[in-house]
Length: 113
Image (tube, rainbow, N blue to C red; front, side):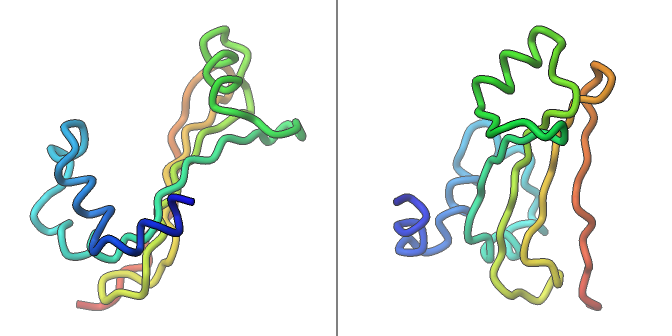
């Protein structure tokens, strides 16, 4: 339902990120124009251990107990066509390996300026 409503608000995700008290400090002036092309943000929970669907609560519960190896939380950023980079989807993933939280992210295929 939310994914259908967001496009009705001009630059919704840009506005949400620059006005949120936790994210506005992370956004630099040069980020503003590319973020105007952000169409959707999604959080996905999963596992590379062939488990059934992982939920936010099960991820957090197992992470707090130290039993989350192979489980991950991924934030996906979906962009419309833009002049800054070729990718339509960028992601940041937190995955638990050997009891340690590791961060992975997609690369960015920058367009020539």
